[in-house]
Image (spheres, rainbow, N blue to C red):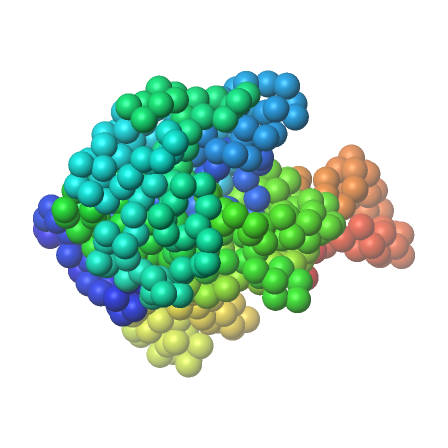
Length: 512
Ligand SMILES: [Zn+2]
């Protein structure tokens, strides 16, 4: 069966385009990855999560996906930090590569098929620079190689900038034109360098991604992804280098995720690598650093809530929209996620074996609604996702279904008879683990993870909760209702909700 058509917004043409791959049924996707000089924070993780869900969804829709996500392990920030710590730059980089891999595994992301590193792509980088010089698109000045933007008639096509707008009075460092950018930087004393035909040095800002994309996926790729902050200059320069060096179109679609917004709307996050010089990242980091509990570092966020709550935080908003970040964001997402789990648990608890349509008619409008939403879910979910990857609308359908199931649960005959009515809904909800990595756990495992993480985060000892629960049970057994109620109140103050069920009491942590 052929792959199903998908449409995505393309920044270069400023329109939604059908993905029309170079090779039938195969999507070649390149994502600008991390510059590894620190732990991954919630801004970086948005891109990781958006493209993880994209890979999952494309595969679900029967595309073969070749997914490359690079690691920038040669960079000014790495060199500066390594110097300060007295370690080798590549050693420092490896520390944060390991940290990044741990975070990605904890978030449940699909590993990329290719994970090239700059330090391992020097040959490809030098080859591409050589081709650019040969084709008259680059020139050498004092051991530094510059890309000549005026040699590229298409320069500015992605960002919409013009050469006039980019010209400044006084080009520096041997450049012929102010917007020319370095492909190869001549070595500076005390910095790591590699040999090249133009003298020792290291790759410039943007050439790595052009070289790594060609190395791993070929001259033309289908989708190039990254944060919106990378459009200029990084992606503009990638296009210029790649297309001038190979003579081929570099990427058919340029897909950009929006950034996190912090506090009063300052730009934040999404700066997955190669941040603009003099960028506002430091300011953003400072703002995020002030967030209580340092939840802005992914590994800290994962101590506060289950990984799926972090995933939901990113995927509940359309990937192109700005995403507000605040101290409550993850808890809000966790509460939303818990509603999905609870609705599924509720649906799974319904019994009965009658014909679905008959029992829905006899139970009334709430049941009819659940049956109808369950049956139409898959088509509506695909329609949202196929049109510019609208995870927000797709999740909206899941929440609509969850609300309808919960309403049906209030019906006194639902427990015994509504099983067949929720059958299509239960089937439909399997799309969430398959395509978005949500609802992957059993209801009990999810509740247990929530209990463990939230008690720890709020500083409540599990043993004291269990002692109070046991005391309350003992009070109930000796019919000391006043004492049982007092203990329930104490538990409530700790944020623990006790629910008495026919099989005995259970408990959960209050989330909203
Ligand atoms: Zn890149």
